Amino acid sequence: MSFALAGLMAGLVTLMSPPPAQAGPAVVPTPPPPPVEAAQEAPSTPVQPPLVLLLDGLGVYVESDYIGVSALTRPLARQGFRTRTDSHLMLKTKGLVPDVIIGHSMGGETALRYATELARAGYKPPLVITIDAAPAPPACTVPRCINIAGPGFSRVRGAQNISAWDAGARFRNHAQLPTHPAVENLILQETARWMAGWRGRAQAKEQGREPAPRGPGAKPAPQVRAPAPPASPPRAPSPATLPKMWTTPGWSVPGWTLPSWPTLPGQGG
Image (tube, rainbow, N blue to C red; front, top):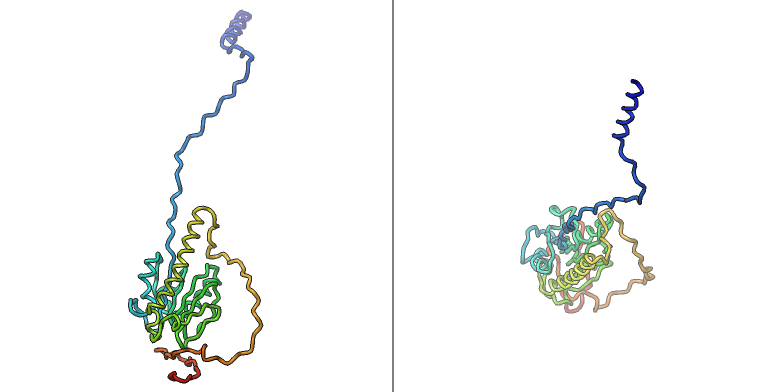
């Protein structure tokens, strides 16, 4: 009885076991292709137009089309710039990072000092244009500065100094000098050249031919400057280099004295 039961169980196990696999070539399953996703381009961030900071001088605290550098807002906008206006105190625009700074009178002095601070902080140095920078303008420490000065106003060391008188702005007092057509034309020619260069660099960057600009924390590459020429002894000014007309500024600053110019025959004091 026990032998019969054992035989029956062995038969059942044999029937339930799967048949032995036959030898043959191994088949490697092909992995399914990865899902095809539609290519999505990352949304491009629109590039903001360059910013011009306009700094008026002492006593000009409102935007005007008739006095001060704020009159340049419309023609600069036609060139493609954004503009912000302020006084030489920069109460509304402190901390702004402009591409171009244009300053008149004490606004010109502020423009030169603020450009130096921006460069020291690691920002790209702005283009600086000053008109009758006063009362004691510092030297230009950025690569490009232009100073348009009437008779009696100081030259800016390190800047390209342009005589407003020789440019055609004659018989125009200090307060009205920024709105003279000859002075405006000089400024707009320079800003147009700057804008053309900016657009060229922006196009090159889009085509991958130029690295991205430095960030605020990046330090600019050191600039190699040519050795300064040996100092020459001062020479007496010749009549050709003296101002052709003296215009007394319409404002005064405590502790500052007007520059004294030699009086030439035929000129007023």
